[in-house]
Length: 304
Image (cartoon, rainbow, N blue to C red; front, side, top):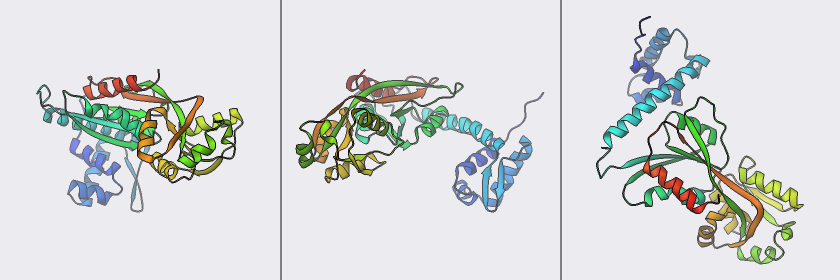
């Protein structure tokens, strides 16, 4: 059976439309008219023998076949972008700049992420162009599988489909400390942690691993703090902590930085609980020295 002649320009238009908020926005990005984009996508649908979009009023919704096509388009154009990056970067040249794309789970504390990722731009011998993005862990790993990232760091293991060319490993773990302004530290440090009954506390949102660890710990220890606020952004949580709203959790790796930046004190570690840090990376990619630097930093600063 002869190979189908696939028009990759049509596939590219489909890829852009599928990822754009609207057909008009996609057409603007492609610098062609919306009617031209629609015509090209219809030609692709005729070639493939399936509708790729369901047209609802002014919206385009991917059909099941469209979702399959988008996954293949992600692979095709993701690898194309990687090819251009590699060709333009002059690999082998001593002045070669390594492009490092890192995805970070939005539940991972910012200072902890910085401690690890900064290793890539601090090492001598190779310059790095760092691109770092936050998001949901499962979405980041899906993008990793189609080469949108070199490395994804999360605070909990990610369930991977068996056919994804992705490896996942635990980098290490951190003890969990509670911190607060001087007045709160003075009040609750003595007799810590049992003195925390009724203590004002700031917690991350319920979906974070840190939140689950804390709730399990307090339940086990029969401690009932007063939850003042739930904050999904770790930097905002620390800002509320700096303002004296309550004590708040910090991974041990970030304690010195938090003391310095937020003018707070360490009440102590919550014995028996640790926050685990995971890395996911493509199984098929060549070693990236910037990724290697991050993994080495993890070995140095995390518990194993």
